[in-house]
Image 1 (tube, rainbow, N blue to C red):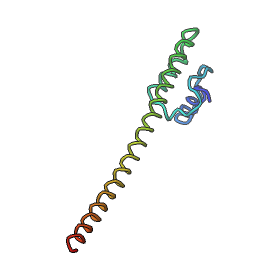
Image 2: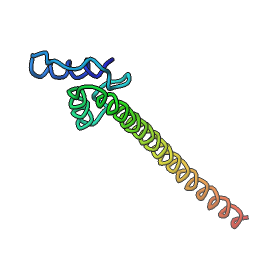
Image 3: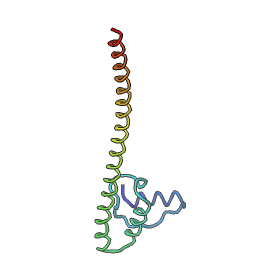
Image 4: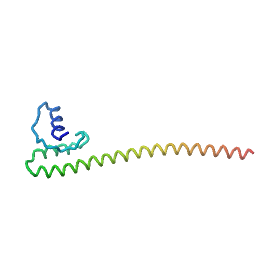
Amino acid sequence: MSAQNLFLGDVTRRTGVQPGMSSSSRLPDGSAEELPRELIDLAKQIATIPGPAQKDLDAAYLRVVDSVRRRRRILALVQEALSQLRLDIKYLMFDLEVTRQERDELRERLEES
């Protein structure tokens, strides 16, 4: 899906008017909702620049978009790992408590004998 289509759809939904834009693609496949608003606005500004300067900015913009998406994926992985770690700690705390109870019961049995 091209940047033009993503932005035209967004602007058209809000205003009901179809704005004119460059047809070059600024976003790799994916939705605009996952990008910060500032990047979306930057893509709109890049689309208005004529000539070779637009191509240079397009390449830089795509690197920034890739970096943002990569960072979000990394953040999601870290958050998932933290959630799993919290769950593992809860299980370990439960196991520790049960082990302590079993130890105490066995000590009582040994003392009774």
